[in-house]
Image (tube, rainbow, N blue to C red; front, side, top):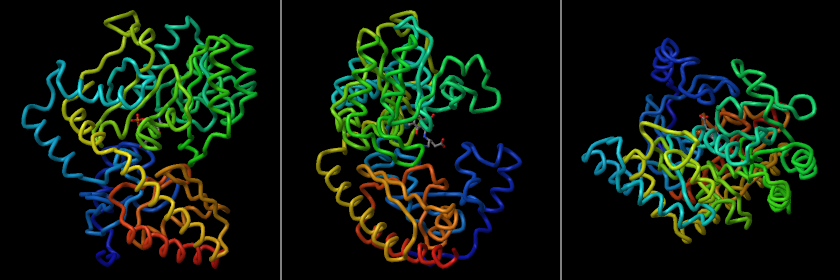
Length: 417
Ligand code: KE4
């Protein structure tokens, strides 16, 4: 690894220009480093487990583009697939063979998905799944979990109000848009059971493994209970597997936990880093989507051939051996981080499932940990409430270097307390 130059000059210069263009200088809020402070690193290239910022600093990357890069950055098969697709044109606005190929790979991996529709983001996918659920049930109320994130559609940018009735979680979201969304705590089966019993609920949407409050795994029986409770009351169960899909298993959380949702929302990995989302599930439900049925949903770049080609190349490499190796790597990292924190006497919890984990640093010290790791050459998610993603490109020496740097960072935090 190249020595970390002190310079972040070019990042600073580019961020000054960016702030004259984009709100907060970014095109998605979390990239602004607001919760950890400091100047975001402007990344100009990535390969394998590494990214390089515009000042030439090499960083071992655990953001992984927030999930898509399970093979590592710039995997040769993905790059080749995108280049070959691009040479044949970047978008046709017409059916193309890549979307058929990717659709068949997804359906093959997730039997609950009998039909699906590609869109261009997880937000679009979740928004469309909600609209479909409301049309299919004739009901208006939906339920989400506090701390669950499903993109920025109005009905889902909602936080708990009084009696679980949703309150806008963003300026510009109207009371009207929020009040049909009820919000209950994750992992609280009684709360969901009571809500679906007392209200006519169209759907419950849940991240089966929460990853937007940090990684939080479902309590034993929770997902099974959600399935039974929603089925009992004619409520559809929507698994938001934008993160967990093809991450926690090839068949996602629904395969890992053996619980079958009515609809599934996907994104991230299925596009190999290009803009993508998808929603799908029971054929009788999906048959309601235009032009087959009355639920309108559309998109200029839906099924974009480059995104589809990147997804096919990515999913084609996700075999049992890859998941087994990811489990070994992620276990090594988790065990090393726990041992490092214990040795430093740092107040830290590590929560992991498969190749995603969160290091919860107590006493508000996550920013200090983040910056100590960044200075040492490791790019962590710039928010305590996000997941680290381990890729197939992270080598043992990368993991061990991460653990060593974390030990030094935990020591420093402990000293500074
Ligand atoms: P996008 O619209 O960002 O493609 O997907 C929205 C979404 C839906 N469902 C889940 C479970 C998600 O995690 C996301 C997006 N994830 C965030 C970070 N966890 C993306 C990062 C960002 O917003 O920049």
